[in-house]
Image 1: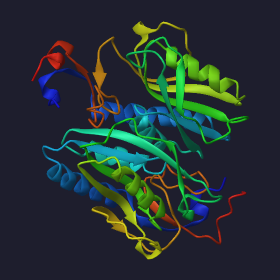
Image 2: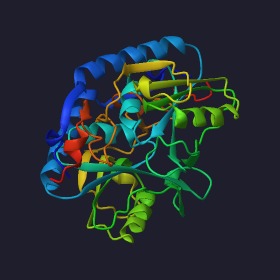
Image 3: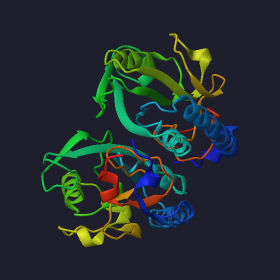
Length: 185
Length: 185
């Protein structure tokens, strides 16, 4: 296991900036969902840290639920193709105001599938809140209603995002220097 | 949805006290697992806030996985029934040091079931870290290695813990006056 400092390219978003922006998003959400029946949905596992910090700053009543998805094909979640639901929601979302909380929107393929799937259950409203938007990589149109930061097409980690399952716990978003990163170390 | 001010009895653990204790636990776990491979297992859904904060205080490399469980029994989670796995681990834990992170342990039945199940997969070690220990409610002996706070036998909510799926997002831990909570608003 390498120390992240060995392959840290740069810190893209530091802890303070993340926390400040999350507070702003939470304030915006709290205003918009006044008197609504808000359900936050987190897609495991990357979105947990963002979800937890975001919900703590929301001042309107809310519920939380989780989904886990995996790809039928080999390779990463972003690979496109069909998505397998490994954990479905416990909550019936019909007539609820659903806010899908995502750490990052990349190609958008997974989230497009999830949106379509959730829509069939007829929520009253359905929006996306994404901490990071890597728009350059988008392969399909995704309406992101609440956006934390637009980021360049770089390999990022920290704040819930992993590198080969590690480093999710770092409190900032950083860029990997791929020449220096050696996962077998 | 009731405003929690209508039924709150008292704040049992405030935000600052939680932060400080979670930091201490993070430091202790980091010391205990230095040089070891560590997998943090978050038990959904109550454990998310504690896990997100605890892992940010870990200074050692670790990976994260989640499990979702429910009881086959009728009624509340803490019933005596067997445990149903809604979402199993993605990680093969054979030979790994596993630390189970849970929001609260009361009767200990669910925890005892999970531990028994995970042991059959032959992890190198298996320990438990709970934020709240409701000792007086224990019905089966279960070893809890790391405890945040001992709490009295009261109905608690906040910091990940719900009442009827609400109030998980509150940043403190409070007890509810159930007679007031149940009274129609």
